[in-house]
Image 1 (cartoon, one colour):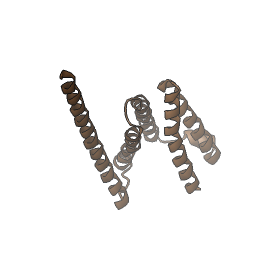
Image 2 (cartoon, rainbow, N blue to C red; image 1 turned 90 degrees about the vertical axis):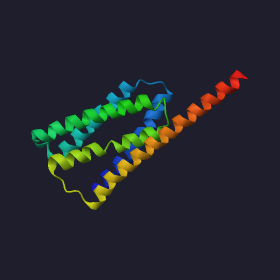
Image 3 (tube, rainbow, N blue to C red; image 1 turned 90 degrees about the horizontal axis):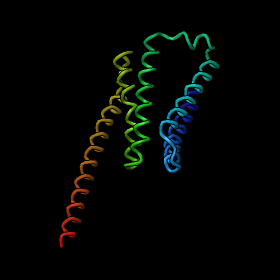
Image 4 (cartoon, helix red, strand yellow; image 1 turned 135 degrees about the horizontal axis):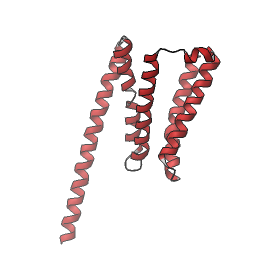
Length: 160
């Protein structure tokens, strides 16, 4: 059963990016898309959790878990809303990578709050996250330098 959830999660995550791009092309407001996204996710999670554990157990969760879920949910909503606004101004590949890298925060919180053991695989994943962010920063710097050179060249050509 865990593999089924993994496949559904990967497919859903991929459809999230496609949905954002379609909504952007149709001129939809990012706030509405974000609201519907998180509303559907919350309802789906409530239904699945109630089906698997019973409604009483769903609400019998430690306070730290509720606080962590609310904070991470708020941060995720803010990140996705920023993605929706930012995708209009940049490459979707860059924006989508940043959204995927946002999973680093729950991982770090899991290590700090729940004292989860960091395996070699997870440690490598965190290191690769830093590497990916560095590559993104270097790519952005290169693009800005190229844009400035193009602008300077067009100004020089305009003076002639």
